[in-house]
Length: 264
Image: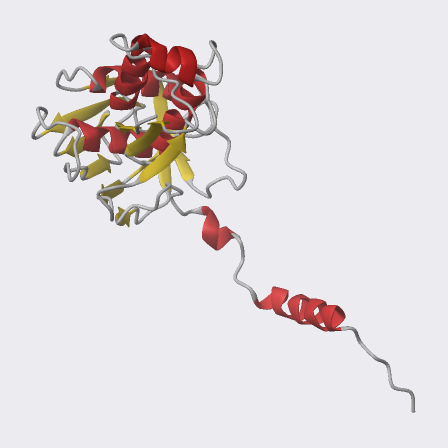
């Protein structure tokens, strides 16, 4: 009688091969609503979808930082035409009218972007009617809802789930990224791209470690020698207009910019 020694990796592979036939079919995962980060509550009892109008619009009360976000998301809805790696297994209605409008209602449009601001929102897309409804306590919550809606749109021509209700609120008031530009200089466009990625992930604080003993890249008009002698180079300096641009870009993406300025 011969004994055959089976390497551990072969045993593991054998177990996997024996287990695979008993796993649930992947179709059971295809009807899920894939939104990141995962909302607190998602109700979608029937896997139905319908077309998004090519003239889709967003109605909202005026807010100086929300309006640029609305324009940005409208361009995204109309041009991205995302195709998921695993297409949702849904019935796309051909008889229902196209979804024409997303209506935004904000309870407290004057609320500033500060620690602890209310970012809750609810999104409702009915099976009938031409309008979806996004309700938020603040403009910052409305931005989170717009990001969620953008992740629900897919295909070319674009379709969106219907008979859907989502309610969401962040688990943590502070959800941030820290970037140290005293030790490593990053250009303004790199910082803007970072803030844009943070907004897509519903983060809300950009901790900007601007200066330290390593370098002082911030141009202070009253003390120009700090940057002239403290920066890594003359092309590695943040001007006041650069800082204003980054702060404003953050506000338009629901991201609070917190500069940290350490002594040289």
